[in-house]
Each structure stands twice: as C-alpha cells, then as structure tokens.
Image: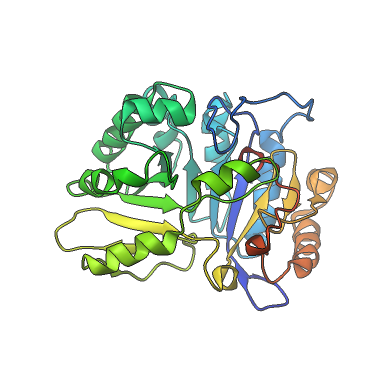
Length: 323
C-alpha cells in the first residue's frame, strides 16, 4: 500500500472528473463557474489507467468528484470502468444532487456503491441564497430515491455557515431521526479567494461536537477507507451525524487519501502548494511503471496542511478538486 514518510497509508483516491459546476455556492463559486480554458478532462481510458495504477498500490476506494460530476455525459461508463479495476472495492461519488433525480437509476446500475449529496440548508429560501438555485427539493427527493434503492452508504453534506445554517442544527438532527443516512457538517475552510467570507461565516466544528456529546451522541469507529469525518450515533436516531473539522488538532495525522484533478494532476493535499502532472504517462507507461511513479511522488507529502496559519496553497476554490 502507498505509504509516505510519516507512515500514513493511502487506500483512498479522490478523483475529479470535471472542474465545471452548475451551482454558485457563496463559499466556493459565488460568481459561478468561469471557463479558464483548461485542457479537456481525462477521458475514460486515461481514468482507467490512472485508477489501475492506484489499485496496484493498494487503493481500494475511489471517490468521483468535480466540480459537478453529473455534468459528464459518460459518467456511468466512468463508474463502470473504475468498478471493473481489480482491487477496487468501493466506487463512491460526491454530487450537489441538482440532476440526480433523472440519473440515479443509471448511475446506481453502473455500480456506484456510495453517494454523498449536498444540502447546506433545509430551508428552500436559505438553500437558494447559498447555492444560487432553487433546487432543494430535487436534492431531498434524490435522498429518498437512493434510500428506496437500498444504497448502503448515503451521506448528506452541509458546510457550517454562521449566518446561514447555524441556527438550523435541530432541523438537521430531526431530518436524520428516521432516515438511515449520515449527515455530515463540514467546517468552512479558507481558500485563496474567500478570506473575508471565511472570517464572517466560520464556525468551529468543536462547538457542534460538544453539543452532540452533551446530548448523549456517541462516537463510532470508522472503517479503514473512510474519510475524515468523526461520526456520532444516538439510540433515538436512525441516522448518524458526522463532523469534518480540518482545523482540529492532528487532523492530518490520519490522512488516508490522495487527490487527482480532472486534468490528471496529483495533489498530495487539498491545500498543497504544488501538484504533479501524471497525464503524460497515463497511456505511455505500464500499470507497474505508473504505480512506481506515484509511489515515488507520495514521499513528498507534507505532515499537515497548515490551514490554522492561514496557508491555502494553490487552492483558489473547492470546485478545483471537489473538496
């Protein structure tokens, strides 16, 4: 398995397949997506070669991200090809849910194992203020459709925002009372273009964590290929509450994931100051050669992201790598 100089083991790949997004979330793309004349995203064959090399290095989980991945017309084929790679046990996807009511059957039939959706508010007006779209009902309909289809690992993400959804905490808790999903609150992260917004909206995840403990929620063990969320369960609730707190102490010590952009650049951290271009080698090197190249590059991964010091690296906005 891929192991860095700090003995962290990486079995989880977050793979962006497009940096285009159809939302205008005020914490990420308040002015909407701007076409920056990027090269075409990786095609299906390049994606298959990339995932095969990661699998040869012990990667067992691939999460497809964006931008918004459902904007790719070949998304079902991408899922099938990732799922077909020997060693890959879980293919997951993160989506804003905008188009999923029309696509969910085809996507699940392609082999998707796990789905993360996004609802930063359960109030339609507030949802529209945050995202720029009046699409909350479509997202919630997708949640219910996925539950009906029996998907085992369903999550709903909400970025904590002081002036928008902080007062909705109880409504979010009530939402998971009778739904077998994990609702994850994500602490807002500073990026290269949201400094003033961050100062206005940032809420420490530890504040919510203390509320959960006070209300008898209990932390649960997570799997080896799980993401960074700390999950809590309660005997009176069918669902769980998760917290992603990148500003917490030792957050990076348990890192198990690497990121590749839609153009094939390896990012050792969401907030790294540099990246390494793998695209020239995807269709010219063997799986073994590409795996060895990735293994060598991973040794440059730093101990932590240094967000607490205000460092944001090359990440201008989260749509670049899907968070």
